[in-house]
Amino acid sequence: MTTSVEIQGRTVHLPVRSRDADSWSAQFLVPAGAAQTLVAPTGLDVMRVLPRRALASLAFARYRDSDLGAYDELALAFLVALGRRRDAGLYVHRLPTSQPFVVDAGRTIWSYPRALAAIDIAVAGGHAVCAIEQDGAHVLTLEVREGGPLRLRDPNLPNYTLADGVLRRAAWDQQGTVRARLGGGRLILGSHPMADELRALGLPRRPLMCGTMRGMRATFGAPAEVSP
Image (cartoon, rainbow, N blue to C red; front, side, top):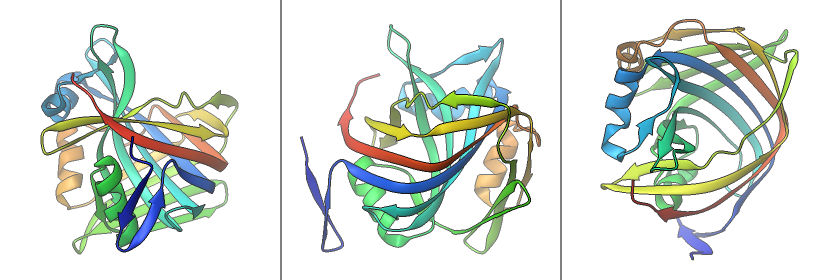
């Protein structure tokens, strides 16, 4: 198994560690058929959490101290199942990121679909707002109300990625408590192709649930090729 990788003349050791980060997430119910169309090239199946409904997640994070440096990013992921055992995982479909080195590291190590973007995260008055621009166009603005009465443990589901026709799975371990609430967010889509993709997916403006994890620590392991 790979234990280190050279990225831009710098050695990155695995697992990659994040020592201090904050993250916010919004979960959306979307038509399962539309979600499966995006997931289909992987050979994975979206999990139906309600009849004809799948779960799409938009999560943004601010990594202040990590082996890859300081950076911000946003992930669009789907809850999926693999194989006959129907093991749950997250298929990471989009991953705009704020730093070029992190883009290269994510693509090289995990085949993450990272792409450089301008990401602005503002936290004030009990709300966190993430605004993203890419290629000179507004992608989205996601507002999440912080905290909530629910205290959840992150299930640390494996991440799936697809690149050059190869499906890969990587384990990760996030340490921290998610404080969550039903509702509590708002999504505004821009004019970028990623926004059009989300629009076609049928994302509602209001999420089903929002979550906050402050002071998160995490480790990201090496990926392995898998067969769906």
